[in-house]
View 1 (cartoon, helix red, strand yellow):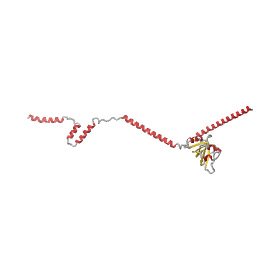
View 2: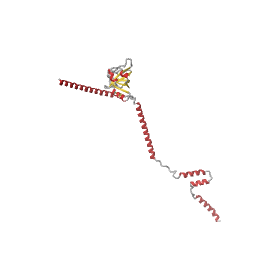
View 3: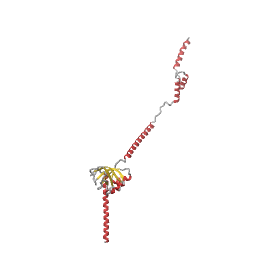
View 4: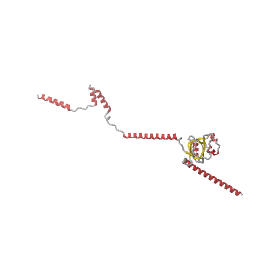
Length: 264
C-alpha cells in the first residue's frame, strides 16, 4: 500500500527533473538532420540555412576594417588631376585666343620698323604707321583718281601711303600723322607712277601702305611715344652724320690748302 502511494510521487519527481534539465544545444548539422527527418514544411528552409551557415564560416560576421589612408590618397590624386586638367584647358584657351587674334592686333611702328616687319613676314601686314608727312609728297596719282598719296618718313626711311577718302582738316605737310592700313608689295605700275623726285626714295622700298584711316594733328597728341622717340633719335643721328661729314670735308679742304701752300 505504501509502495503504491510512493510510486506516483516518484513519477512526478522524475518528470519534473526531466523537464528542468537543460538539454544539448542543437547544431546546424543536427538541425538539418532533424529537418530532414521531420516531415514539417520548414524542412527545406532549415536545410538551406544550415548550408549557408557552413559556407559562411565563423569569420563572416566580422566587419572589415576600412583603409582610410588609401581612400585619402585616392581623393588627393583625383583632386590633383582635376586641377591639372583645368589649368591645361585654361592655358590652351589663352594660347588659342592669342594665336587667333595676333594678326588682328595693330601696333604703332615707324617707317623703318614697318619695312623691317614686312621684309621679315609679309603676311603680318596690318600696322599703324607713325611719322612726319614729307613736304611736297601730297598729290593725286592721276587727275581722275579718287585716291591721294603722300609719304610718311621717320627721317631715315620713307613709306608711300595711298589713301582713298577725306583727309582730316589738320592734315599738313611737315606735321605728324598716324595712318592705319595694310602693307602691300610694290607693283611695276605703282613704282613707275608719278615721276616726282620727292617720292623716289619711297618708291624704292619693297612695300607701300594702303591706308584705311588717317589721324593728324599739329601737336603730338596723336603721335605715339615710341614713334616720337624714334624721330628724335633719327634727328640726332642725322645731325651727327652731318657734323661728321662737315668735319671730314673741312679736314679735306684744309689738307688740300696745306698741300697747295707747300707746293707754292
